[in-house]
Image 1 (cartoon, helix red, strand yellow):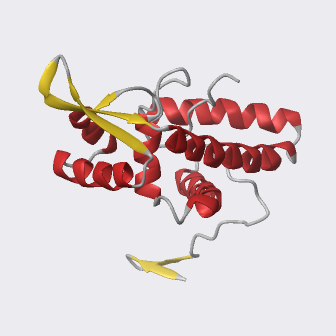
Image 2 (cartoon, rainbow, N blue to C red):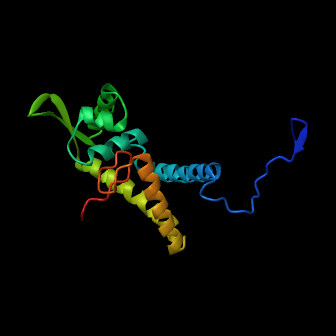
Image 3 (spheres, helix red, strand yellow):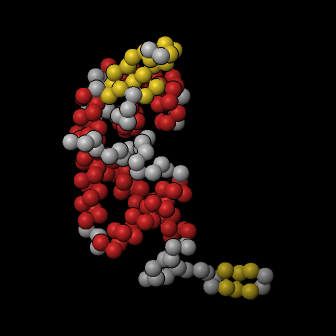
Length: 179
C-alpha cells in the first residue's frame, strides 16, 4: 500500500495479461529495447565470419565507404567521430587491403577512400547474413503483423531522422549491389 496525505492507496500494478497500448511509452520503450538487443545479436553473428578481419566500428566504416567514393572528413562526420579517429580506422582498413586511399586530384588537401574488392566482399557477405536472419524472423510472423511492423518501423525511422531507404545508410543496411 502507498500512503499519501492520510490516505492509503493500492500500488499501481500493470496486468501482465493485458496487451499494452501504443500509448504506453514505458512498455513500448521496453519492446524497442528488446528488439534492439535482437538486432545487435544478429549484427554480431553476421560479423563472426569476418571477425578476424574487421570490428563492428570498422564494418560501419566499410558500409559508408561502400556507398561510393568518400572524403575522409565526410566519413568522420557520418560516423560521428573525429577526423583523426577516422584516419586511424582507415589506416587499419587500408593495411588490411579492404579500403584504398588516394589524394583527391581536385583538392590535394582531401583524402578519398574507396572499397577494394575484398572490402566489398566483406560488406556483401555480412549484409547477406543479416538480411537472411532478419528475413527468417519476419517470415515466422503472419503477413498482417509484418505489414504493421513495416509501418511502425517507417514511423520510428522518420521520428529518429533516419534517411529514407533509397539514401545511404551510415550505420548498416545498404541494399546489395545489383547482380
